[in-house]
Length: 222
Length: 240
Image 1 (cartoon, each protein chain N blue to C red):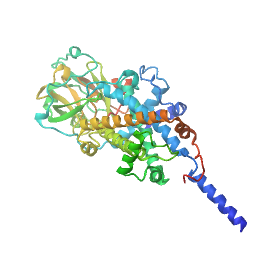
Image 2 (image 1 turned 135 degrees about the horizontal axis):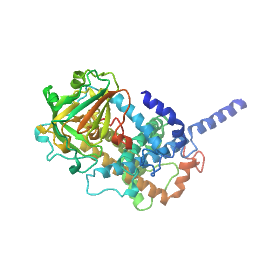
Image 3 (image 1 turned 90 degrees about the vertical axis):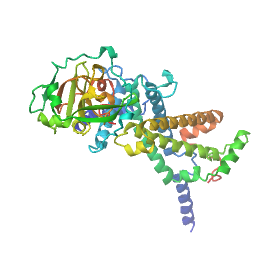
Image 4 (image 1 turned 120 degrees about the vertical axis):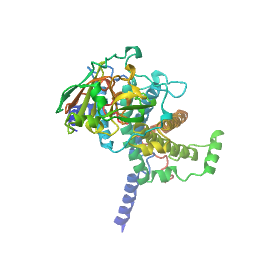
């Protein structure tokens, strides 16, 4: 009887460890986060250089902020990094659904909760709860995932307007695909700016994304 | 594709050593004769992208065609030199030299090419830089020309040499695509020097730099010969 109880206790603890219940950011998430950071920075920097070769707005990006010294190198970086982004992104989506990460961390989400949390944040009255995303964060995370998907799809439409013509047509043809690709990039850059700014304001959120981190009181947040 | 596999095996170890450090802005394909580690990594990925594009290529998918009213005017010149440097080729003495896996290697004159059935297309020309123009080209479908000279269409590549020293090569599947033509006319008149007189390749299923101008020699081969821009770092297949 006693033995069975002990077994049951051990079993629960093992399950918790396995599910990463006490870890703020489980290792797959940390790994994918940093791989994504490498891919997305390479894609944005090389993408800016590609844009500079034939700008459609009255400005170009400063050369120091681009990756690849000339167009040929920039395209090569862009089309190399896209594989990392796509494979890593696919792994993230599969893991996010399968592990319950999306369900528990990004859901539920309502316009009312977003307005409430946004209003609180503006008055600096929105507390940071370890491992819990507020409604504004949830909206931004879901939004940036959607922008990433749009960026990949419009990128494919620009890359292969003939072979992938249905995709090209879906986005309104070669040029409009290019414009939407640019808009998606802009949204992602704005997200990164806010994301990095918030980390600078609340630096204690950074270590858990590197080493995992533990919830302060075990069990409270489960 | 064996060419890429061999390359891949040779570079795999080095690419692994390269590891996660993909952010090396100093690596820029700046000297094709002395590739650094990053250049090797980028070439490896470019080879992989060639394979993906070959798999994606559907010989029955046609590039979109446009109405005469949509033609871009004035036409846009582009080359690796100024428009004043465009090669002047005498059409009366010009010959298309043939080499490689071709049954009848006799050189062709412009008159002989004009005597073959011609086809016209209004298609979009997309430059690797990102801009695009719509133009009208007409000439001899390359697949008909390849048949006329008894070329071995089981060979892997068709490569071109130009009067200005430019060179490039394409895969046989793309060469046999119905919209791939040896263009003689542009916008209803014989090609002018800046636009590739007397004969250029028009291949709307690939980017602009895969449309060599002022062609003087054509070879059918299993040997990969690359190209002028490809050597410097542009992706070889560069399909559209």
